[in-house]
Length: 443
Image 1 (cartoon, rainbow, N blue to C red):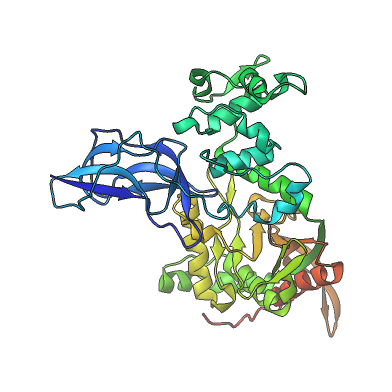
Image 2 (spheres, rainbow, N blue to C red):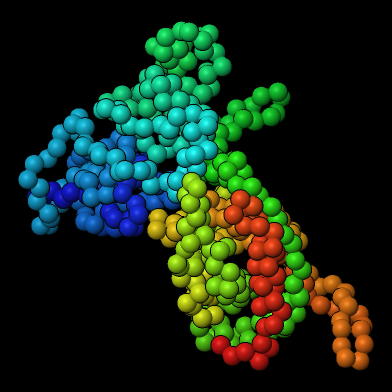
């Protein structure tokens, strides 16, 4: 017999830790090689940790809601084959040493520290008490101060505040004693007993049919991100209508041959992404971000592509160095990221580092939209539905009415650093590239 250490795998260069959200196996269960043992979550991506070996789970070193550092041993699996021997087996009741990074790996929160300071002090991990990224995000979204959070009784390992603890506290927050009561009294009055706090949240029927449904973890993060973006950026929009008849006809002509040759479906998205990447090279001051009073001009053009998930939420995988891809490469990147987004197989690094975002509201039938900027970026483009409409066509022989394929491009940008001229010129350049499409282009 040998004992194998199941460690938290490296999930990307910018990811240093993850929160354990669910054990899929219990002590004594038999595990096959490549079978999922537990579920983890970063601030944006949920994923499973599979076993590298076949054996029996003999020890779990972390509990649900614990934060695990990359490379730390999560569990011990006993195998019959030669495994990786361990010098000593930690006891289950020993608190794993967790050293939080200099900043929480949560891109949704990085550029918003200035806005937060006007509302509440930032939540920190002080002394022996550690707060997971999820708890910190909930505390920030609900404007819970550091002292208020420190007063909440934790039911997790070593008194750690879990998601259920902070949600239970919020449910009773309005019933707290008057100002002046001690933190200990306020906490005991506001937090439910441990057994009640750990009950799973289920839809509650009220008023003869209405239901109260708890938001998902991702839903809460998105809601927090959207509100802070609106509070941070001065949103303004520019709209332009583009004639994409040439693109429509060209794609119709080449899509079957493209699919046969490349094994990929040629959609409109990579065509639009190519035009956006070209326009960003022309207008590099759109490809920026804000850090306090400083502007960061990004060297790389990394295009975020908003994708809808089955649960109704959105996720934004990123096409890195999009300006360096030809149309075939762009098509493969778009299809790959979209497919893996729908099956929850994206890696943490694949949803970080975006410098500009594109969202396709036309997928749902909308002809235009006013999207919210994906912080810390300064602009986002919404693609409307392609419609067949009557239009005035100008020729040397005169004008006439014809049927054209058109769509609206909606550009939202941060008016703190992008004025109307720059924001309007950029989206006009995207439209120009689309309308100037070469109908004889070869792939």
